Amino acid sequence: MSRTGTAVLVALLGIAALTSCSSDSSDKSGQESDKPITKQLAQGEISQALPGAGEVISGWEPYKGKRVTSEATYCTASGGTAPKGWVRGGSAWFDYNGSTDNMMDVGICLYDSAENSKAAYAAWRGKESSKEQGLKKKVGEESVLVTNPGLSKDSVYAFSRSGNVNIRVKVEGTGGDSTGAQDVLAATLKRLQQVQDGERPTATAADQAKK
Image (tube, rainbow, N blue to C red; front, side, top):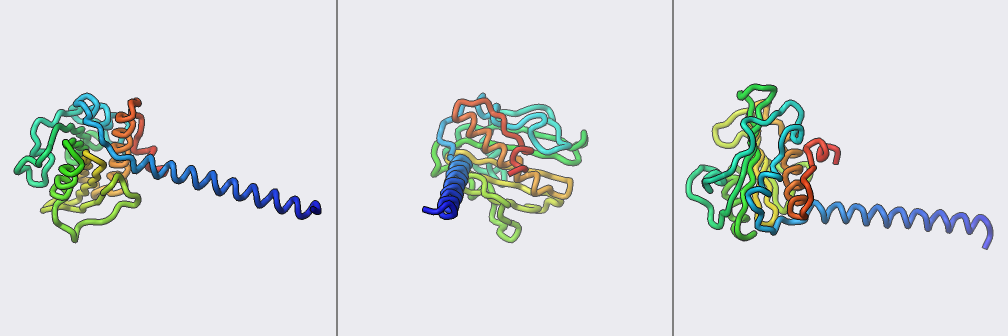
């Protein structure tokens, strides 16, 4: 084979190898983001997974710490009947630049099965399809944004379901920051995945914003 032919062959093999590596990396990343939550997480593990100071979007700071959800009705759209299969949950509140006029609420709700979490997710997100929009990138097995649900103004709710867990990020004020809500939602799921794997949760909204 001529030198020219050899050079072309080497170049083609190099491109093929790079393409393969890129594909493998992409597949791995996709598998990681889609990994469902199947473990029956303890209350402490849920608290670990909830984001804290410096782990949500800029300007937001923890408000009165993380909370244990003692009532299943917290995980419903109307605060009415407790959803079937609810086990436990937790939430973290944040205020914006020290003002409670603008608030963020990150909630995690754990169920005894994926079947029950799926039904609860459908009820939690509500039925205002005209106010729904897709996320820039899917979070978990199901996810949606709801802008100004009910009679609210300048608010956005971001929902996700992954296995037996439902997550809601509720942002009220600041014009309903949909991009920030999505990043916090993705970070919270990633933190749950890290806890499920026995790792220290380190994911932040800033990390997710770069993806």
